[in-house]
Length: 151
Image (cartoon, rainbow, N blue to C red; front, side):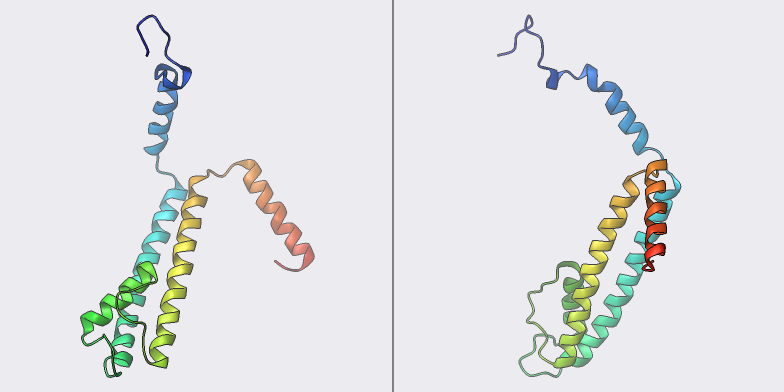
């Protein structure tokens, strides 16, 4: 039990953390070029994913609506299936029954995995400010790849 006469443990001393918290809040309020690039890339990914969603919906509807034992009977069913595939790589609706529907489904899943992984990497990369050592390291890596002929 902590009393008035006992000092607070170092982990609970808020006074020492005040400058750190203040600095983090100040950093959250800054908007640098890397943040603008990240936002523009994420908007591009969202727009392209919406386009893939619309095209995928049309294709799934066209290929699956007439298949026997299909669960895709309307354009909304196709939209639901396509959107869920892009967001979670799974669905309550059975997997496509036709070969062409399965090809579309594989494309949707590959798109989702690549876009999610790429977006996560872009967010991570934008959280690190470019320092001289980072830039110098990247340049050295580019030069080394160029010398090997793989760049």
